[in-house]
Structure formats: C-alpha cells, structure tokens
Length: 107
Image (cartoon, rainbow, N blue to C red):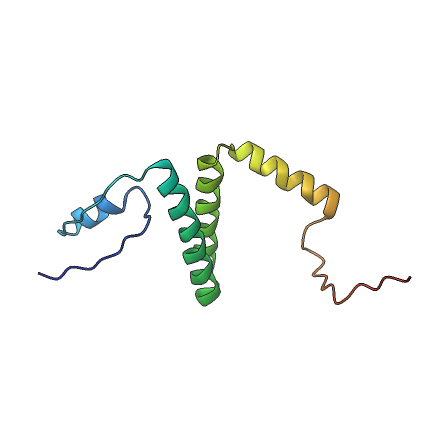
C-alpha cells in the first residue's frame, strides 16, 4: 500500500474526488484556531504556486482562499469588496504600473 502524507487544508470536495478515484483518505475537521492557521499556510502555498505557474487557475485558487480567510475572520465578502473599493478610490489601484523608486524629504 502506498501512503502519501499531506496534512494540508483542501477544498471541500477533495475527499469525494479521491473516493471516486477508488482511493481512501483520512480527514479531520479543524478547530477555529487550526483553520485560521491552515488558511494562512494555504495562502502561502497558493501564492507560491502562482509565482511558479502564473496562470489564471492559480489566481482563482488564491482568491478562493482569500475569501475563505475573510469569512473565517468574521468578515463578509461584501465587507471585503467594500474595503477594496474604498481603498481603490482613496489610494488608487495598480493599473498605472507605478514603481515608487524613492522619496526625498527636504529638511
């Protein structure tokens, strides 16, 4: 028997997909604190995968984890989008591709 240890947060349907492939998986349900910790680890994992592949699938995975992290921390998606919009209005987005090279302060 071949066993692969993962110990990572996965999407809700992954155990079902593994079972449909004729494999057996062992899962557990995380506590709130464990879930927040694993979400943070998942953000790192998905960001690393995006850096490697730089495709829209990895961006979608990142967005899904950000949404889950917001909800797990007690925010709604509406609140998250509202804050994004307010920051975009107040500080702008990233469309102009501005690279801040330095700031000089005259004394």
